[in-house]
Image 1 (tube, rainbow, N blue to C red):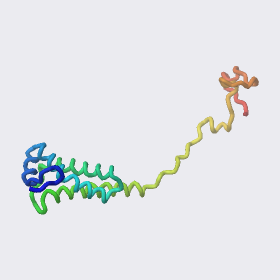
Image 2 (cartoon, helix red, strand yellow; image 1 turned 135 degrees about the vertical axis):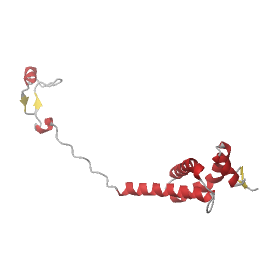
Image 3 (cartoon, one colour; image 1 turned 90 degrees about the horizontal axis):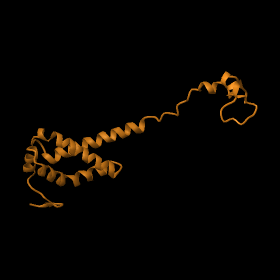
Length: 147
């Protein structure tokens, strides 16, 4: 047996069988065994460490959900897990490409409000007005004066 980090490299088949039987220790050992390799792959293909870590977490979440359906065919568990990560990375790349291609909308034109259409008129006697020519009585009657 060799060492991978601080986890003893045990038979992967045994770990997978135990994890499929809902053994959390087996899942943790598989995670510790595979995480550094998967993170290195994601970091080479994504723009930042945070995005890479998120992609690996997403890949492990998918693998955990799909583990009961995993069957020993082809290249085995490591290739299966790598394929899941590859798909996660590709999906993130497509999403970021779509976002980069979408035009940024110009600032929406704001329709003028009814007060804007009055052309700068103001109600005489506006509260807080210090102009003595404004008659508060006219404010109640809705009389407008030019500025």
